[in-house]
Length: 366
Image (cartoon, rainbow, N blue to C red; front, top):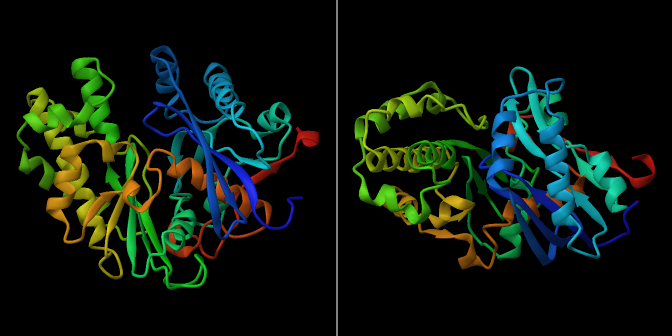
């Protein structure tokens, strides 16, 4: 059992961009943020990224021993460098996400981490939500609600994470609890960094479009952007969630373009997807705070600012850490799970009723 009151919780995130493992500490009681603690990052080496990339799309029962050992080892390395945690939130590595079909698959076993760290570990956050009819994603919105309170927001605002895919959380900080009706609306907006990174890697051998250099030198093929926005995904009402490779066909759509033009077009698709998503918000957000790797891309940020009526800023302007926000989210969610508090609700994943998702593994059970 957790002690009453605030807990020093450690959370992790290894995203679909496959760049590495983030770890971050949050002092929280599962409802209120009392402070933020140390953070750490463990990059995946090129060979390790190749192992994980080969595992993408695979489900339990397939040949995943090497990838699973890698994920667990990398997480233990980064978590072992931060002391004084009372609980760990272990997201694992998403390999496949098909909420209306086979479910969702995050690689890595919390039982092993609990034994190695001698701490309770909360993991498998998404399965319970899917079992109750939800999308299983996004799960950061309940933390975003707490962040809105932390920064003393006094009007509805939106948080945007630009990872492999984009996901948006609209928050009304005037509501009492995140699970209250009208407090949150969250959903994946569409492709973000994944198709950009894949195109840059295939064409140049580099892992990403650093500083938006290629996109900034290219010309956007507007016909491709409009064709993507006319697709079925954008006609579907939120909440909704995507697999990393749901828009893999984009590579074929830009294959005939020069490198810079292709990357500029893929960047424009990501920004236009977000702009389309903002239109679904119940009330226009007073500001958009951006986290994730995409906020480091000045071309992406400029395109967002040009397409939206509200200010667009990295979350750092509000005193938050855009590199660690998702790891912090799973620290916060771990405490909520351990205390039986909801981690998703109809407005965030489309689940039928608020759900507390996650397995708690304790060292003696591991």
